[in-house]
Amino acid sequence: MDRVARIGRAGRLRRRDDAPGRPDAGDDDAASSAPADPAEPDASAEPTVRPEPAVPAQVLLVANAYPSDGSLYRNAFIHRRVLAYLDAGITVEVFYLHPPVTEPYAYVFDGVRVTVGNAAAYEHRIAEQPYRAVLVHFASPDMVQPIVRHAPGTPVIVWVHGFEAEAWHRRWFTFTGSAAEIRAAVAKDDTYYRGQLTFMAWLLTTDELDVQVVHVSEWFRRHVVEPDVGVPTRRPHVIPNVVDTDLFPYVPKRPDDRLRILSVRPYASRKYANDQTVAAIVELSTRPFFDRLAFTVRGEGALFDQTVRPLADLANVSVERGFLRQEDIATLHADHGVFLAPTRFDSQGVSMCEAMSSGLVPVSTRITAIPEFVEDRVSGMLARPEDPVDLADQIELLYYNPELYLSLSERAATRTREQCGFDATVGREIALIGADT
Image (cartoon, rainbow, N blue to C red; front, side, top):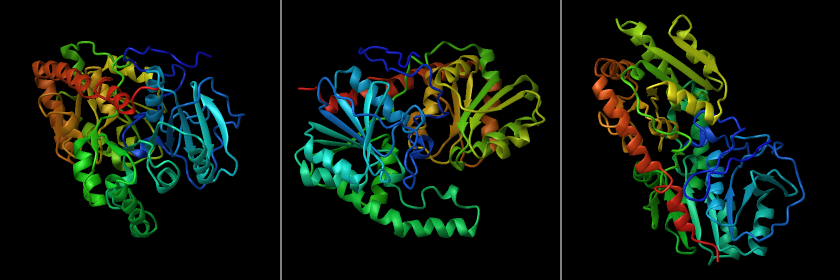
């Protein structure tokens, strides 16, 4: 099996050609990357003898989960970064911090050396193995305190992705189903959120370590992380998640492409507002031009079947459940012209940015970080939150204005390349990490 398609060190990302890509894989939201359940051991990676590297790694990346052959989607957006670092000549290895593991073990995934171990094993690694930098994703005290104790002079770069720096109420839409769900969410404020936010406040401001912090959007930094932890970031950087513009190339669209509308989303959480997508399509079905439109709805998750049920009798709506390879998503991009992606909470919206890279016009929600990546009526269309009629109105506007559609398509592709292409994202991360010595 051809495990890796190598796309060189000149600025392109490598990818697994044979790996199915989860819808929205690599999204900035933690829910889309499906970290491992900390209460269960990870059975997806076969324990192996730790490979002896030809050259010891100079950089360690620690995360709460990492992909393996048995779990391809787990924090896949972190894996894409690691491949780019390796291509840039940085010797990096991964420690997957997983508390239930009693004995550490190792495996190799796409040429990346990964160790799986508990907090004690990780502390031993930090104490015994010198690194010139430690890269931290989904920070926790168990990841950082060993560095304070054993290697306080080592530079640390922390990526803030989502739940690890949010107050308990941020994802209100996940626990509004019953009083019991609300009580459980409030209880987590005592058992998890308060302690974690206190830790993050220390991490964002400490001078006990040489720490730099990467936020994926300015909105997320200023409107979620810093308000929720209660302090400004002492050494901040805003670097979005990367979009592979070679995998998602821009091919100029034609006017009729605006009639083909695509939705590819996870259905694991109400965050993605797929119910709003369905309601907007139903609303459009009442308008005289509806039969000229064609919709493609793809996704996977526990909420899929119940969410898409109202679309069953609409002949021009294709609905299919299942995971898609990234290459398959790129093919869908080529066959469509509009990407329908409302949301309730996003610190970036990676799948939306990937569609923009392909020239699709995004129709999304004027909420959270979305306006930082889509300028309304310039590089996309933004509707009011929780308003499927307004979503339908945006699509109607594109239907009656093909010239506007073509302009938005070209500008969407340009904006994404400038804001989320390799040089603006992973290239900046590589500069932060620095070259091996």
